[in-house]
Image 1 (cartoon, rainbow, N blue to C red):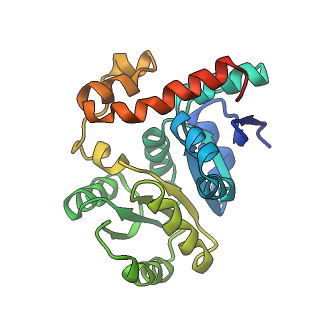
Image 2 (cartoon, one colour):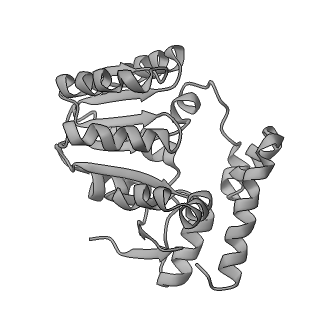
Length: 240
């Protein structure tokens, strides 16, 4: 059982590496652990502190892992041990690779038709057992049909790229009908995987400054950075 550390009132699991997450919390050989994985970053910590509904969604997850360096750093300080940062896009790709040997059935949800089609094609070439997919442009009234398709496919791993909190809300509806699968919200991961969106260069990732690269690439994100400043303030004043 991985140790959990509370950050801003959210219990988050400590892991040594991405492989540690895949092999202890999601897969055990051919076995898939049912549940829901949610990445936790400073923005989500602040959002949860301001909105009880967001916090409720996060607390329903069976796996909460530190996506942002700000979260893993605070966890390391609190626990006195090394805590790996687990970038969601890397976790997803490692998970997809890990399913190849067991051929665990995978279902993809989200993104545009062109992006998800390309994602499916790339995964099939790698040997991943993709049993179905659905782009993200469906109305809430059609969600039941998508869930039915997932259930019929026999999927054991379902990754959903609809953006937060839409992807989490869809997952919680889906797991009621298909409880024996592992679900993971993956945001813009398919876009990065297919090259539709460029990930931060290696140097930015090495220095844990992907947030800065995204800000420089998309200056309109500056409002979202206020949450990062709030997070830093709360850490410095021992309110995390």
